[in-house]
Amino acid sequence: MPKRGKKGDVKSEAAEPEVDREEPEVKKGKKGAGKEAEPAILYEDAPDKLTTADDKKYTLKISSWNVDGIRAWVKKQGLTWVREEDPHILCLQETKCAEKVLPAEVKDMPEYPHKYWACSDDKEGYSGVAMLCKDKPLNVTYGIGIEEHDKEGRVITAEFDSFYAIAAYVPNSSRGLVRLDYRQRWDVDFRAYLKGLDSKKPLILCGDLNVAHQEIDLKNPKTNKKTPGFTPQERQGFTELLAEGFLDSFRELYPDTPHAYTFWTYMMNARAKNVGWRLDYFVLSKALRPALCDSKIRSKAMGSDHCPITLYMAV
Image (cartoon, rainbow, N blue to C red; front, side, top):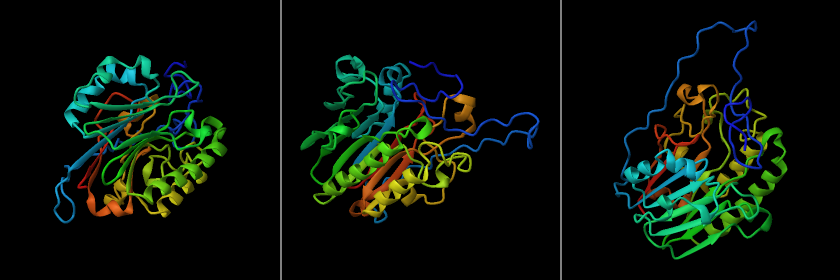
């Protein structure tokens, strides 16, 4: 497993090349060297809106977090945040852990009697998603019905009375864009899967979708146009998803809010400088727009290279 802190290291996900997501530091002697560092502009999460536009109080709270290894996240007191946030549904990505070796602290949480895990079939410590629910779903499925995608443990779908909840960890294109072709196949197939669900009842998709959709969604768009997560192909894939009748809940409510990121590389003190990316989303069927109360970015929560996000809905 690669050690953190070396040049180029961003994640330690086994068997998947790390991704460089930052602007290189200015070298001495080049134009602009010697200037004072730009002051960090941090994102301030506004007070939670607990009602819809027509004053209906929320009845559903969902939180999502890429934990970058669930065992490490537990040791970093991630569960303390979960108990304080107290969502009805908790979705985790990049758990990097087979079900048989999950931390007891997570497996035994009485607050969430209904727990579901998806792990990689053939790569130990790779990918993985989880969904923990206070209320029992009507039905739970794993994957999207295509072996090429499902063997990596990236999707859990739970059906409830009036909606589907989908926890997803979308594959990144990897360093050198070696998986970009695969990522584009994923985008097409995943979009078709979501359209199929949406034809039955509206859905809430959450997770690390591994794309910064617009230039406002990362600190340094000019220097990252060929970086995984900000290529034209990946951004177009997300545009096409929204065009099928879905909403990016955060941008629906905060279309022009800058500096709102959910991921920061461990290198170069990026989080303290707020040099980040918005990679984590709640995507909703348009039919759920009237039920949307708020979509939050909990940027002060520590424990991973991502921060959690929370959605309030009146459903």
